[in-house]
Image 1 (cartoon, rainbow, N blue to C red):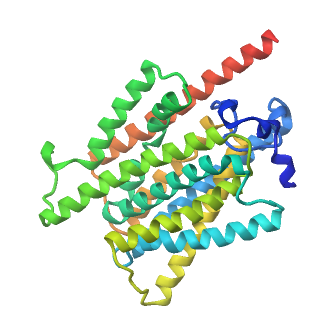
Image 2 (cartoon, rainbow, N blue to C red):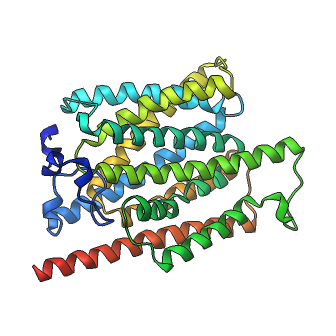
Image 3 (cartoon, rainbow, N blue to C red):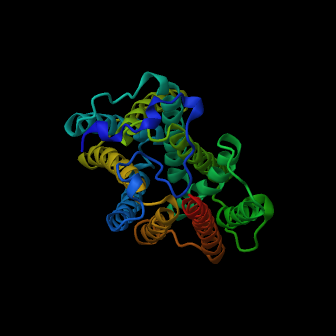
Length: 355
């Protein structure tokens, strides 16, 4: 498929007059938008859901690797090396598939930069959260992003924000409290931290994870703002380059460079970059083929694998409150995505019938 097939008529519009997509529309450019109701598209959606499952699996392995070396290699150093690897792989892929301009049209430089910056901050904060929290807890906190996406979409894209969304936000807040169990609430069976510094690091890791979830929401909203004007690989290029620059600043500002001491550590850093690139490609193509609502359900795979890896590899056994909180967050955000998708699907069908 050539790059020109992704250049839809919206590319000729001014950015301020873009056509907003909804949850039924793919978030990224696709060549089969006009055939959304045919049998081929149904098969494409099945492929898209499979790709989103692969995305969740890739992210799970990625998080596992970060946790494995995060006790010795600084988190911002991990994000720096992985993003450099991702950038190289993405530029090679752009050349291979025929994306002639991996930096996109000049009029979108601003929004592509904002998208890359939000992705960079999301990656840096979530990587840090992974090194400070149990793997399952950190993954669940990052899963809060659909709530923040709904709020930001209401502010930036003027999408409706109903009472249902507000209730979901409150439930997710309650779920987050159950997962993180902040010390000032004095949960009865909460184990005492080994030191006050451990408690501070856990709190900082929790805050970092929430900031990461907010940045993921910015990623989705700015991707929808950009719309169908660029190939998804262009967005990945910006993500890799800007994350590399941001990671350099954060690394030498608040952390220190640590030289890897073994072949294992070098290999893990390389594989984190490969997995980061793969997950972005799976997500990009998956969102092209599958509506965002059903696709979000595939992310449940990531939460399940995170808790499984936490138990089997790191012996991090979640208590009942953590399981309950994770269930509330995962269930609420999935229900929110499905409701939004079904509502937009009904609206589209009404428009089609009236025309």
